[in-house]
Structures are given as structure tokens and as C-alpha cells.
Length: 152
Ligand code: IDP
Ligand code: MG
Image (tube, rainbow, N blue to C red; front, side):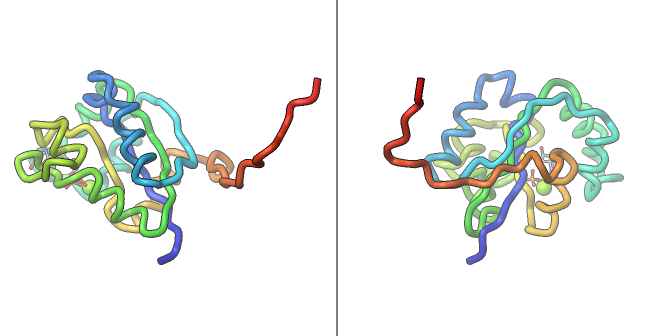
């Protein structure tokens, strides 16, 4: 399976509840590589582009109000099949249906405040990453040297 990158947001509720490290830790322990991260307050324009597929739905205005209400942490995670992997670690959209062991299944009760966002397809991942990050902001992982020293 080819290496993929996907966008993850820790939503405002996750940041406010102090769950940023918990979310990062779950993806790290699963084995994905973190290749970009920033904290920001999303504005309406970015929210509309990020959630373009939901424009016109009954919950859209509430979703935009929520996601722009306080800072989010945006990240890019990399792994073979990263899009589906991240979705499985996140759990189902509605916490009523999220399996225990998933982020939403362990940490959320509300479909509106469900802690995390993850891209839903490889194509959408490319688009969403470009909304939040310049290409140069994504790092390449390299093997850490075993015996490096800092010279004085
Ligand atoms: P996802 O976040 O699992 O990809 P989407 O269907 O893309 O789920 O919906 C985006 C976000 O909009 C959800 O995470 C959730 O917070 C919110 N949302 C989705 N459906 C509803 C709904 O029926 N009522 C209220 N909020 C919803
Ligand atoms: Mg979605």
C-alpha cells in the first residue's frame, strides 16, 4: 500500500479539554508519522472551504460556528493507507456509534463536539492539507543517526 498523508484537526472541544497530547499520542503509538502541525483559529472562509461538502445541510451553520469558536490544532499524518487508518483510530462520526478504543468512542458524547476531524478520502486529504499548510511546511522523515554528537 502506498504512503499517504491525511489531515487531522483536534477540534475546539478537544483543545479546550486538554486532549491534544492524547490525540497525538494515539496516532504516534499506532505508528503514523507526524509531518506537519500548527495551531490556529479558523475563520469562516477557511471553515466553508474545509467543510464544503456540508454546505446547505441543517447542521452546517452550527458546525461552522463551532469550528471557528476557539483554536484548533491542525496536523498532517503519514503512513501507508493513512486516510483509512486515521478514520479507524478516530471512530464513527456519532459517538453513539463509535467503538470503545477509538478516540470518539473513548472521549466524546456529542456528534457536534466529537474531538477530531480526519479527511475522508485520499483526494480530499490532498485538498484539505493544502487549505492548512504550504507545501514547504511538510517535513520529510529521515533515519536518526545512532551515534551523533554535538561538538562544542
Ligand atoms: P466526520 O467528521 O466523521 O468526517 P462528517 O459527516 O464529515 O463527519 O461531518 C463533519 C462534522 O459535522 C462531524 O464530525 C460532526 O461534528 C458534524 N456533524 C455531522 N453530522 C451531523 C449531524 O447530523 N448533526 C450535527 N452535527 C453533525
Ligand atoms: Mg468528514
